[in-house]
Structures are given as structure tokens and as C-alpha cells.
Image (cartoon, rainbow, N blue to C red; front, side):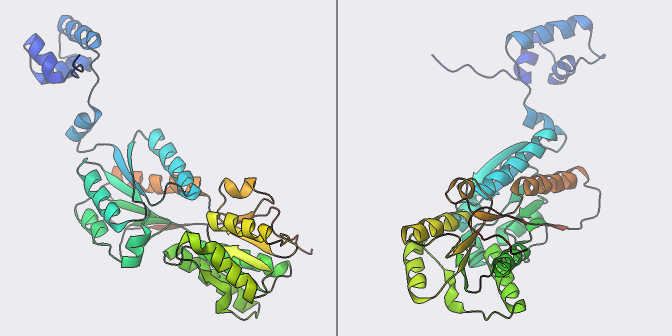
Length: 344
């Protein structure tokens, strides 16, 4: 049995031998159309399950009320939280979302933007793919802006592109975490990074180094563990623990914090008595492992809400001057069981 064809304004107009404009006015209960004609058209539309095409209607107003969202990694709980915030505000403001995952690929990010631009959307909210940051190739963003489509970047951003941005104060977050270790008596503080190629990873490393320098603790490059392949984290940690005395580990994202805790436990280290751990970010896993991991919260939902409000404000105030804002979201430390209590 063939699939039922969706009925259109044109079909209804043909049925009653009137113009499309007359049908549209009748369905919108316009006083310009006689009650008798309105009643017939409205009844026919209801019987045939007519639904207005919101994109076609909005295109008449030069707006689709649709936002494209590009997320680098859907398995990362932080991005899931950001999306919850984006979806909340978009729904409240009557906007639809089309979402693509770049999966950290420059090529996928470029093709996703092309695909979504062909969907005639109003603007983009996105976080830059890892490969794009490594290659430093940002022309697809500039081309989109040049075509009059606004972009709001969040979390992973670039100074190369002028647009609205919402970022986390990653440097401050790592600085505060490192200071927390120092205040609880730790001196041999290692850093575990699987994101050293990303802007956020570089900022977190800066915060870590700043805290050590202020405490007159020498920066030991051997304690800065940069892991390229995620599978290598166990090997890298074993080499580090075999060659260096370590009493604290700052893990720059959620999975590395959980893996570090698992490896330390399997090697017989007591956490936090022997080695303390703090991880970015405050996802589901750090709360539900044993011991529960002390984390830096980046307020992902609020970040998503902020980015969406910025974009919609831009879309609905086109006459305003073109100026760009960067909003910075503060982090906070959530103490759990993998750090020692403060001495005071």
C-alpha cells in the first residue's frame, strides 16, 4: 500500500478552485473570507489532516526558526549537558534544532556545515572538532559568517574567527584544582591530558603551571603526561608511577580521571591517602565510582543556555550593530572522596 501523500495548501486550493492565498487566509480565520467558505476549507483541512509547513511559512518571513548544532563528541558527558541547555532555551523560544556530530573530524565538521546550510537554517551553535584545532583550518566558519549566517562557538573556540563565544574559565579551574592539592599537602602533582591538542587542554595546563609557580614548586615536565591514543593511558601511567614519586593527579577530562582511579586501585595505591585525584568534568561517572572523584564543574547546561540566548538575541535583533561578545563561565570544585580534607 503506497504511503499517504501529505496534503498541501495547493491541494486544498485546487479542490475548491480558489487561490493558495485564499486557503491560507481561511485557515488563519481571516475576516476577508466569507464564513461559509472558511468553514468548508477548515473542515476539509481537518478531515485530510492538513499540517502547515512551518519551514515554508517561516521562509515567507525570511526565517526558518531552525538552529544548527555541531557537537564534537556525543559520548562526552559535558557536551550532553550543553545540549540539554541548548534544547531547553530553543524550545522556550520556539526554535527547532538540527544536530550533527563531527566526531572530532575536520572533514565531517565542514560537510555538516554545508549540509545544514542547505537546510536554510538561521544560525549555528558549535564547538570545534579536535582535528580542526590541530590543522588550524577555520575557513568554513568564516565562509558561513560571510554568507550572513551567525555562529556562536562554545567551549572550544578560536581567536582566528570573530563571532560570539561562550567559554569556560579552564585556566582558573585547573589553577584552583592545583591549589587545592597544594593546600592539602601535595607537592608531586602530575597532570594527565588526552586533550593537549585542544584550546581547553592548553588553558588547563597553563592554570596548573601558574599554581605551581606561585607556590614555588618546580615544574617537572616528566609529571606532565600527554597521552595521544586513549588506549595508551594505562601504559603511560605505569611508566610515570614507576619512575616518579607522585602524590596527586589532575586529570583533564572525565574518562582519564576514571581510568587513572581504576589503574591506581589495581596497583594497590590508596586514594586519596597515597595519591589524590581531581578530574574535569562533573559528569555521571565520577559520582558513581568508588571512591567518588573530586571534580571541576563547568556548568554545561548553563553554558548551553547562554550560547542559545546569545544566538537567538542576534537573530531577533538584526538591526543592532555587529559586535561580538565572549562570555566566560566560572568553574567550581566539587569535593568528593579522592582528595584529602583541607587542614583548616
